[in-house]
Image (tube, rainbow, N blue to C red; front, side, top):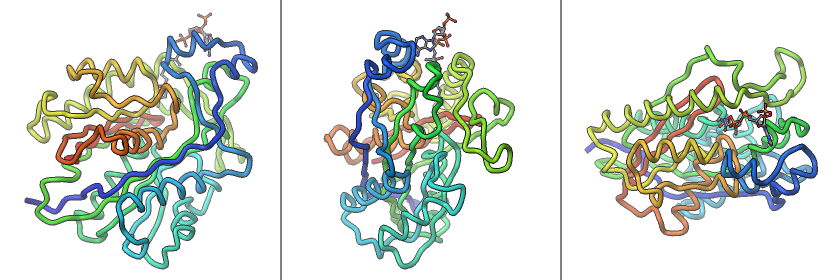
Length: 320
Ligand code: COA
């Protein structure tokens, strides 16, 4: 049995303020019916003024550390997956490391937009398997409300703020843990989903821009491929999967992947209706919900998948 990264605990944080579709319909030309029908989204959480990505990340990390039952002195590595850092630099993860009370270890951000959590999990897993790190906190945290064009109905209805986290620990000869991660990117479609600002290009923060229909088509294709890749790498079939925990962008994309795998809808974790698309935070938020409410149990096989701007896409298979 190999050294594996076992998930010791999960955590989550959502800002208090909820913005419903009805409220959005008072600001842009949209309806609750259109949003629900096209995306499955009914509401989203929005960070308060002065509430930063690091605040969300810290709350989720504390929740995960408490659930894992470990001390902060045991943590060697903090990774924050985010496309909405507090500042252009330093890494938001260093602020989280400090506020957690860590006096050692190292911390950095990973930027792969909506695939960020799966990427960060892959990075942490490799640090653990190489023996360089024993315990890692992997966080997905976003304040997409800050980069939305609130006058653009094609994008502002789709996203929300939040954070989720997991604690990983390397365990020898373990049947449990991350079995494999599979990461991909292709910059050919950079302009289909991007932010029209940045420190090196415009010197502004910019707003999210997206060609939704084209992104949809790519997402369905790429996610089907990467799920297949994960299963065949482990010589497993879709029947072996107990839980699909997908990136929460759109209910129709989630249903499409679930159907392709032949999974009963009851075994697909869905939060997009309440959280909308929280980018890198969506998978750890969904994981925390399904673990804390008792759906995901020890020993079960959990498949994560995500796709985001870049494009980036990836999957992770975990024996819980
Ligand atoms: N409310 C009402 N009407 C809207 C609207 C809104 N919020 N947003 C767009 N529309 C209109 C469009 O203007 C268009 O009108 P027209 O036919 O008069 O031109 C019509 O609805 C259809 O727009 P279209 O963009 O073709 O709709 P769609 O069925 O593709 O759904 C998305 C749009 C964005 C929901 C869908 O393409 C999607 O989910 N794409 C993937 C996005 C995603 O997941 N991105 C993140 C990946 S990490």
